[in-house]
Every structure is written in C-alpha cells, then in structure tokens.
Image (tube, rainbow, N blue to C red; front, side, top):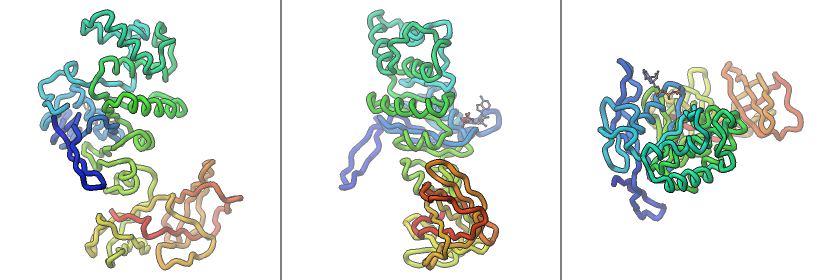
Length: 373
Ligand code: ATP
C-alpha cells in the first residue's frame, strides 16, 4: 500500500498509509478545465477538507474520487490501487450528498438497508448492520419514519448512516451540512467530529465554509480555479498562508501591495504605492529580493488601536475611525488612514464605551504579525 513518510519531533520517521492519492489529475467539461493538474495525498484516518469558493472544482475533485467523473488525464488511487477502470459501486468509498438523496417512499430503516439488500447480504447481517448504523447516528427511535417526517438534521443523520452501513474505507462528504441552519450546523459539526474520532475512518469533505474546515479538519486543501493553492493543517493555512488568495479567502485580512526596499538579517521593509512603509519580520519563507513586488497580509485581530501615538519605531499609522460594527463578543473597526487606505481591525469587546466615529486614532501591529507573500 502507498505510504507517506512522517517525521516526528525527535526525527524518527514512520510510515503512514495513504487512502487516497491524486496524481496530476485533469478534468475538462466541454473545453473548460474544471480540475487543473491536482496532486493530493490523503492519509488513512485523516479528516481532510477541500475548501474553496463556488466553482473552483471542489465537487468535481470529490466526484473523481467517488468515480462519478472520469479523469481526462492523471490517476486516482484508493488504498494504493488505481481506480481508472473501477466503477463507483466497486470503490471502497461512499458519498454523503448535500441534498441527502434519501428515498421518500422508504422509511428510515429501509433507506439505510437499501444498499445492503442490493448487495444481497443475508437478512440477519443486514439487520445487524442497520441497527449498528442507526445507533451510531442516534436515530434508533425514528427508524419507522419517512424522510418527509424528519428535520434537516435528522435527514442528514440518515444519509450518514446509509453511507456508513456499507463500511467504506473512505467517507466522502459533499457540503454535508450546507442545507442546515447555523445552530444545527454547529451541532452537527460536533457530531461529525465525534463520529470521525469513534470510527477512525478517512473523511474527505468538500466545503466552502472556512470556519467549518478550520474547526473539523486535520488538513485542508485550499482550491482556486481548478488548482490547489495550499495544503496544510488549519493553523498552517490560517497563520502562514502561502498566497494572497489563501490569506484573503481564509478569514479576514488586510492586504498591502508594495515593493521590497530594504532587507536586513531580521526584517524586510516594504513600501506601498500609497506611501506606507511596512516592516515584516523575516521567516524562512519571506521573500528577500530587493525591488520585488510582494503582498503584505496583516490579520484584523493582530492590529491594535490607540488614541495616542504609540511609542513604536515602526508599523503605526494615523487615521480616523470610519466605521464601528458591534459584533457582541468582538467589535469590528474600520480605520481610514490619512492616505485614504481603509484598515480592518477586530478587537475583543472590552472597551466600556465605544469611541465615536471620526475619532482620531492610531493603528499599530508587531513586525512579527505582518506576513509577506
Ligand atoms: P460549488 O461550491 O458551487 O458547488 P465547486 O467548487 O464544487 O462549486 P464544481 O462543481 O467542481 O465546483 O465545478 C467546477 C467547474 O466545472 C465550474 O465551472 C462548473 O460550472 C463546471 N462543471 C461542473 N460540473 C459540470 C458538468 N457536469 N458539465 C459542465 N460543467 C461542469
């Protein structure tokens, strides 16, 4: 079986089997490229999410793994075996669709048993497996209801049970919580996470909801226009985005385009066309070529506000409060700098009373909180 080499903090290597591999996969619809040379390694037992905006190719990627679409070039492997000539029903995967795709004329029990009956399993085996699946999703008491008599969350659970009853190696989830309202979505996120931990299966989830991907996944692939922009753990994706697209798509951020005008052993200095000079603390990934155009990203929650000029040598700018949005636990401030640039600032709601609009204010942030991409 295909494996990936893992190195722990003590430098000891171990091998982790791969459940899903995509090798330079392309998919065209008519003349349009929906998936553009994707490479992916998904490890056994991982909760892996494919995240990106509408139309970026997430669902097509999932359907290529499921076998509902055929790659025009490249290879899909599941548990080390090429899936090129393997139809969907022979792949060790099951898909949960956003629409649930339940049969309305069958009750909960029969919906879950449907696939097993097609496979002509023994009656007692079907009973045991359906019972087990119902228990997993806590739906035993509603086994006789029809899907139209269930809430959205309950229908979602039946859809999960119907996929899990086949004991797939990999569970594919296409926007599984997309049809639920926010509160139920949060509840189901916890259940999905518990289910993943209890079963130890590989989950591959497609979502456009960055918060959902960040909170549930072991690793995330961020897609844009048919390509993968970055693969990493939630904190790598959030704290160390490698491209302006990832920085902008994952959470809010302030982006400043400028030229590198100075480089020393610990920092680079970036001058923007709008007249700001921003100092960025150097990391291994920081570009250091003089005159190179870079995009500096600063997260709103890393920016501080001060009514007086801060006693700092760098990265503070004067402006006026342009907009204040009260969000309950946090407050979102928009500060318009004297050069007209607007900066987004997110602060915990700890002020007794909020400052008035048009108040003269300073924004500042640490050199370590600016990232050059
Ligand atoms: P969403 O979040 O809106 O579902 P997505 O990221 O899942 O979007 P895909 O459904 O994979 O995106 O679509 C990628 C591109 O391929 C889009 O431009 C879409 O219009 C196109 N596409 C997808 N399926 C087909 C199809 N069957 N025929 C023609 N074009 C298609």
